[in-house]
Length: 447
Ligand SMILES: Cc1cc2nc3c(=O)[nH]c(=O)nc-3n(C[C@H](O)[C@H](O)[C@H](O)COP(=O)(O)O)c2cc1C
Image 1 (spheres, rainbow, N blue to C red):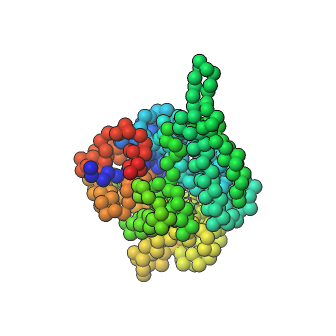
Image 2 (image 1 turned 30 degrees about the vertical axis):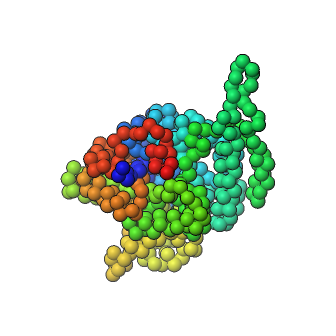
Image 3 (image 1 turned 120 degrees about the horizontal axis):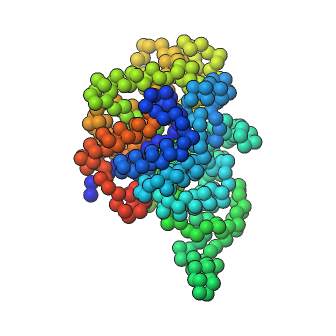
């Protein structure tokens, strides 16, 4: 059978990778309404998507000068964060086939707690659950948990290794046939088939077993997004799918090939690690309409919000710099540990600067560019144009599928489902119906 692409819908409000999302006149604005998420889930399932992808942060983002005010004021990315496990629960109930990725932190949560959350969701979703494992390296999260804000980057991954080791053992602490449920004899479960861990490690002591029978998925599908060398090693060891924000095909391919090579060095066999690349489609009935829409979207970005978001990304206080400050001056002051320096946006930034090498880029110009799509590629055109671009990225083996990030919520998913999905299906690049053979099989991970 022809290789088919995976698709996920990115669920982040009130801003998304597009910083002006909630201001779009077709966007919903009540992001605390459960029905909104149920409807999104139904839309994605109608479009035969694989996943709804829920990112996470454990703090209100801080912006311009280290406080939350600007980003909350203008409804920037992450100004509202529901607890991901509770957010997806009604979405799970509203669907039968769609999978759900929730992002949870190995730094601020205990392995037993994490194993139990995913254990319950595994059961309740009939195995349709995935975990985007993050180390929550950003300082602002630490302030909410009484930790020293400067957490050591690599040590967080050491801890994450132990968390995953423990979670996978906890998910398997009940053998598949441990539940007996014999009402006549009164035997509920076979204790011989339920095992303690008695783990004593560098970070945790966990006795086990988990207080839940093994779930139908045997635990969640494991996803990761780190891009540092240590993050890639971590993904190579554990990830089944990686989520990438890469601004171009080369970046996607390099990341995918590199993590796969590292996995091979570790002796990993089985299905190759898949890469899902974030994309931001901007659709129009004609190319001119799509271009006009992109220009319209840009006008929804508040410059002050954009600057605050850029400051958060850089991890430095931008309030001392005039909006017209040359970007080089600001980058030189970045301490080398920001998200930009960690790799997520650095190649993007270099490319933007290189596009017009004679232009003296200012802080505000770059900030607006970043707020347009957070360095996610914008695909602007008709449904057929967008399908062409997705097809090229997919067939060139740069990636295995896409995370569709919205410019208006949930209308972007409705448009994509109505216009682009049928085009991809016509080309044989996407399923036309679910296989009914289980989540891992839908994702092509059971090879
Ligand atoms: C594309 C992408 C998406 C991410 N999404 C999240 C997220 O939703 N929540 C979070 O806490 N961290 C997120 N992260 C942060 C990573 O999980 C990781 O903690 C961080 O990138 C530091 O690791 P690194 O230096 O290996 O990249 C994301 C990172 C990338 C590159």
